[in-house]
Length: 238
Length: 238
Image 1 (tube, each protein chain N blue to C red):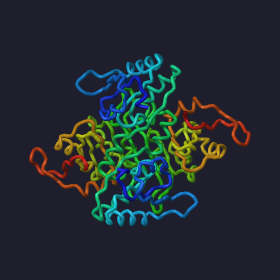
Image 2 (image 1 turned 30 degrees about the vertical axis):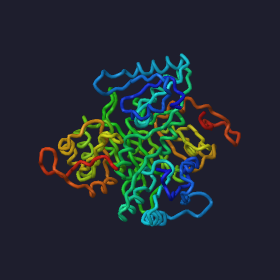
Image 3 (image 1 turned 120 degrees about the horizontal axis):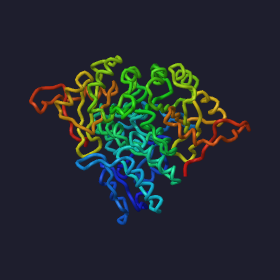
């Protein structure tokens, strides 16, 4: 599919190695929403997808992670179908799954959780915030995306919902990238650990007893400020 | 990684095409839990993994879907680490994500759901059933695995928890295989649709307003008994 594309619209979080599979003649358009440049509006991306396809181009839209989990592919698919253009979706590895794989920990260990939740911590414009109190009672492993600006609300909502303060949390910054960093902590220490380890976005938080083994195997290290903490940083997995 | 393996332990649901990447000299052991043969006990698989690795073999464990989502990889990783054996996990595409991709529908469309739940419908021996009443209140898309024997409890639990009877449901049997079948229905009609379409395991149920578009695009067809129903069967996506 990549080899046959004549136009590729590429997000910032796409691994550059993927681009090697495109044909030399393929036109590559960067439409990322991160980084130093101004972000590309979603409506612009949808118009460009449709316009290029109607011109007869074979268009590939490359996203990091999985396009159907927080990827806004639903809106892009709807725009293309409305224009009568056929769409095929190739699934990918969402950041929470990549993070669990590099830590070597199951998201649904049968002794701990009968399932896993992937939820955005970012309140949608005009939308409702996730029901942290309800999720606290689900008994499932919680994987929170885009939550770094909402750690106070997430922590307090989960505690208010009855989740124990000593519930293990695995924080994974830039999962599956060369710069991946992992930190294990507990729910009550969430903000302290993020500050001490200077973690930033993109970062997934994996919350639940399924992370117990990661926390138990954790080696406390001195944090950058020289204060001994109950958390520490691991490098990229071998 | 597949090319370097000297022993491969392979589940039944693994696409046979994957085996083509193994070296000719690699020994392939089928350890599936389905099909006509007696199932392989989990403890046997774990002992075999450890024994072959300790003998110096490079062992690959091939599973369908993602190993960290209902794959029991947690137990296998624990057994290997306890024996001092290094483990690397390669993530995969879990059935719920594959099902959404072939239907071309987002699991987390921002207008419908701030997240998605992957949960087993199968009650663990000695474990607790998922809290369907709680999940009904989560506002998230629900993807239920291994739930075909529990459809009565799932439907009644979700309705009791407040989920509307007309909530859209997408049923996907044998997702991403050559025999994939998709059926759209509503929560209140769940069992009727499964019976009318003669769906069987493995089948994921994707429940939530994010499936609205799939249901709206649905073309009712005559069911096998010749009775007009509100559901219909789609073939494999092109």
